[in-house]
Image (cartoon, rainbow, N blue to C red; front, side):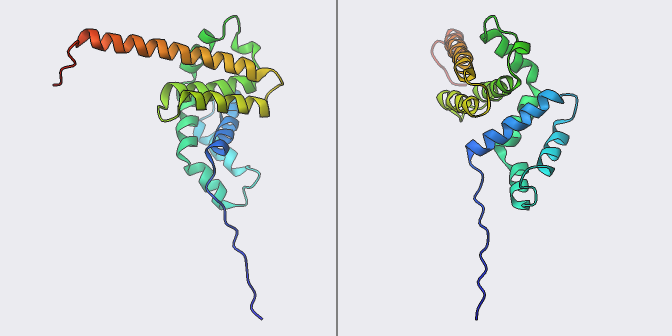
Length: 174
């Protein structure tokens, strides 16, 4: 009699899963910003619920999205917080839940620095994260703040385009 063994096939983590993992990392970094982001990533991977599965832990460590966004947020946290403050009228970061701040940092990083993710997708995914992980009404607040960030980016983009055109009205090539 032959014994058949089933191999466990693990698919590559989805972008949504990567976003959730990144949210956890950004959240942890918010509590431990004096720690090196690399050390926090190693700790997270070591204590990940399925850490016995080496494939998943390597997948997390090597995922381009997770690396780019997590380390990007850690590097640019002051600029992200300034943008969030400017677009959340009458709200201080200290008054917001830490989950909301983490979601906003992640989404604002996407909006500012990752051109390959459409604005609507970043905002929608942030809203979905808020519905899943934050309090009942936070998703509307997050949607509003990110809408203001997107509007500001659109205004700045129009201003930059006008400035480039004013500097080179004929669009000449070098």
